[in-house]
Each structure stands twice: as C-alpha cells, then as structure tokens.
Length: 285
Length: 295
Image 1 (tube, each protein chain N blue to C red):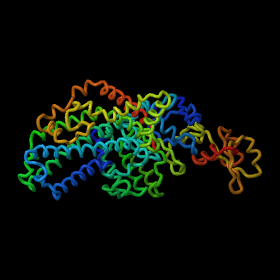
Image 2 (cartoon, chains in turn green, brown):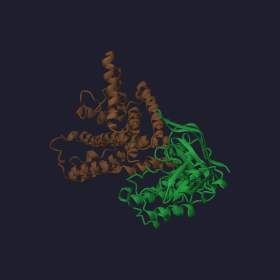
Image 3 (cartoon, chains in turn yellow, brown):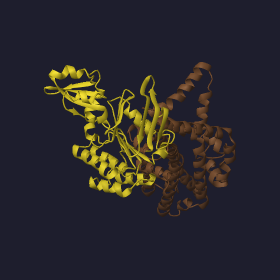
Image 4 (cartoon, rainbow over the protein chains, first blue to last red):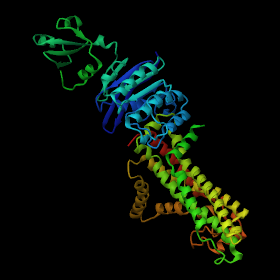
C-alpha cells in the first residue's frame, strides 16, 4: 500500500522543550488512524507538522509532498479541522460555501449544502449569530464536502452534543470513508472513536509508545482478570499495568505467553481506551 | 474566478467599511450640497467662479483621498492580525491558498483596490454634487462645476496618485503588514515603537539622526518627489494649498501635466530604494505568516 504519511526522525523543538523527539511512523492509504495521547504529548505538534502549519526537523512526506514548503498544494488533497480553528465571525454561511467552492478544486458544493440543510442551519446567518454546535456543523459540512485523500480531525466534535457526535462519526464512516481516503483523528473521547479506528498510534512526551493496527492489538496485548489468590503468580508473568475492580484485579500484559496466562483467568483483548489508560498511566504497575 | 479574486472579495465581506466609509462621506457632502449655503456670488467675483468651481471639485477629491489614506493605514495594521486573534487563521490555512497569495491580496487591497473604490466614490459624488449645485444655483456657480478639462485633470491626478502613492509608501505598508503578521498584541504600538526606538538609540549613541531623517523623508517626502517643486497647490511648505494663485497655476493657466513629475519620481533613487525595502519586508511578512497560527 502507498504511504499517505511517512515520517522519519520527525523532531520539533520549542526552545529547550522537545515536543516531538525523532518520531517515525507510516500511515497507509485507506486507514482510519487515531493519534492518541495525553495533553502535551505532542499530538497537536505532530498534526501541525503534517498539515504544513509549522516547521520541523527530520523527514516528512504527506501525500508525496513536503508539508511546510508546499502547504497550499497539499491542501488540495488534504483537509483538516483543528480543535482551535474557528470560522471567521463575520462570514455568512452561504459566503463560506461560495468561498470554499471558489478556491477549492475538490469541493462538492451539493454535498455541503445537503449536510447544512440536514442540520437546519440558516444560510444567511453570520457565524457570530450561530451557536457553538452550529458553527462546528458548518465547519464539518465544509470539510466533509472536500474530496480529500487525507482528512485530519483534531477534536472535531468539540462543542457538539452526544447525538450530533454520534451522527457525525456515523456519517464519517458510512458516507465519507472509502478505500481512497485516509483519516487521522485525535480526540480525548477515545471511547467514541475506538470502534471506527483501523489503527492506533499512542504518543507520550514526544515519543511514540504504540503503533499498531487494531486487529493486531490482540496478538500483542492481553488483559486477564485475576482472583486475589492467584495475584502473586500472575504478577510473575510481568504485567505492565494493573487495575483493581470489584473483587478482581485486571492485569495487562504485552507479548506474554498466552498459554500460561490462561491458567489465571479468561484472556481478553483490551479495548483501545483501556490500553490507553494502561500504557499511559504514569508510575502505575 | 481565480483564487486571488476570491481573496479580494473576502476582504470586502470582512470589511464592510470598504463601502460604508466612502458612502458616508458621499452622503455628508451631498447633504451639504443639498441644504448648505451655496450662494457664492456675493463672495467670489464672477470672473473667478471658474477657478473656484475647479477648486471645489479638487477639494472633494482631497477629502476622499485623505480618508482613504487613514483607512488603508488602519486596514494594514489589522489585516494579518485579525484572523490570528479570532483564531480563524487555521480555517484559512486549511484551504489551498498560499501564504504568498494571502499577503499579496491584502497588500493589493490596501494599495490598489481601496484607492480605486475611493476614486470611484469621489467621481460619483462630485458628479452628483455638481448636478445638485447646478440645479440649485443655476447660472451663478453651477456652470463653473462642469468643466471637462478640469474633470479630465482630476482623473489623471487620481490615477497618478494611486500609482505613485502605492510605490512610495510600499515600505511603510509592508512594515505595517509585517507587524500585523508578527505581533501578539498591541499591534499599533509595535508598529510605532521600533522606529522611534531606533531614532532614539542612534541619537543617544552616535548623536546623529540618519534613521529619523529617513523616516521623515518617507512620510513627508512624497509630494516633492512626485510633483514639481514650487508648482502649485500641493506644495506642502509655505501652505500655498488652495490660494488663488496656486489654483491659477493648477486649473487656470497650466494643467495637471505641469504639476506631475513622473520622470523625477521614477528616476529618484529614493523611489527604488523604497521599493526594494518594501519587497524585502513583504518576503519577511510571508515567511512569518507561513509560520503563524492562532494567538
């Protein structure tokens, strides 16, 4: 598969602070990748480098281009919503559609208008007159109407209620996603996206701590709920994290001998959000 | 439509003052023409109504041009700062629009589009006012406002001013844009402070005044560079603006051609030095803009 994003030794420093520390990863076409990490882990820094919004050290190719040098051309094939990006307050909804239609060769006007009429947004209103959720809907309508090879979403559903969030992710998978597209998404609400991700990249303190397809997570990771009487024996198999629940302790293992773990209890594949907590809880285990 | 045209359109959407301010001036002047005292017959001897008429037309142009200069200055200070402050800059950067196109569209808006809008507004307003006054005052002064040659000269003057002002003030415009792209707050202060600090530092350290003179030259040196010295109503020193003899020279005996000095302007090293500095500052502004995100 061709790589949509290829990073080698990607590094970004802000003064003495190293936000990204020689990061390597490769994202292939047709995947939905979750870039997941705690606050300050380097997610936004990585996103900004990928989108050509900041300089960086190391090598980075996005859809075959150098993002910073070729941002304008990259944006013909990539689109994004950053969590902090807002539409200009003075812009009317219909003007926004006209404008993106005017400057973007891959914009599908009808698709944006269909999305907007579905969410009942008045076209003649200025952004400042819309509620926070409506503004997000307009931004999503504009972005989703672009036939992009790469869609980058940084906390895309901020400000949306639960219903709107669910319907956004549903339409992302049902209407938007196909094998020609690639989606890179970050969000704090890992539970909301974990079922649609095909790949996860965990990032912490500027380094990648996990880069795997979701299918392969089961080959690598195992979680076992252990009774108190077997706890010491189970700990002998070197879990990297443990978590107490009612009466039992759930132990997390990486590349452990599954046959031996089976004797302590039922082996499960941890969910992405459990794994996130397990991998990134500092000082635990 | 090309991306650049969309970017100019966008500026009109964002800044409704582009139309509102000239419309407001036009409305005020029209009100004056409709209800003001226009009986000049008692003040101006009949032999001079033609000159006074020409001067009135000229004065309207001056009003529009001065307001336009102030408005453009404000616009330049704000243009690259506004969308960082309201955090829409990332939306703009998600579109396939290069930072070069963005910066140049704003520069062109300030130095070409806005002057043309005011030129148009000034022409329409003067036509309307000439008509109103003709009807109200009939023969007394009305005829004095319909002078084809004066009209033509005013058009030439506007075009000449737009071109030369745009070139002469490019370094200042580019400086304002650079600050607008760079400053995190207090844009106006940052625009003024470094030149003042440079002037003061030079004065304190070397006792010389090179920087200060360069700035003064750039701010006030336009008239002597673009117009023949001592040649009429636009001379700054000596306050000859609008005296009868100056009007004579501009509208009476001579023509606008005796006033304009395009050869002097385009052969002056100051013109080209300004262009070069302006171009450098624009390149720097584009560099800063491409690294910009929200504040």
